[in-house]
Image (cartoon, rainbow, N blue to C red; front, side):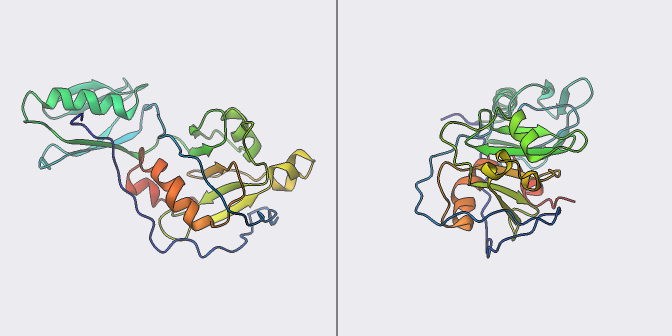
Length: 237
């Protein structure tokens, strides 16, 4: 097992006493018909680090060299003992590997955890049945359908009546908007809601019977492969 482990455990507590939530345009998206669901496993997000991102590095039993590192305009981060490391364009796994390798010259079997503490720009995270799940940066006013287009559109297995927009503090009663994409495709543009920084979009393959359980079991574990608790707790404005 590699010594650098990209793990962050984020546990949802007292999640989502769900009710139909009104979006800011005043439209109530259609409800999803309850049904049993066997959700497919989701891969972790292979986010590419960008300039001005803040990376949280934790080295077990070495708090003095752990800390937050900002990606400089030259794309590098600087860390005590590890020195300058090219970060922009690399994944967290790659950064973890490099930090671990460099620290191994000074520390026996270093245990490293790397996460994003702050994204540069205004991120929206798209997960589930889309062509390219990942983190996308907002520029100006962007609608839900535009974000889905950036994420490669819906897959063949997507259920167009089962899209969640998760907004606010993910760990403590976030606002959840349920959107029926088929309504938008039919011309009801009121459901094509405006995206806000830190929104999470999830496209399901099947109807979702228990929203809180689904977020706890399938959405949050994917988010926690990338983000620190500061990101998960950030409330969208």
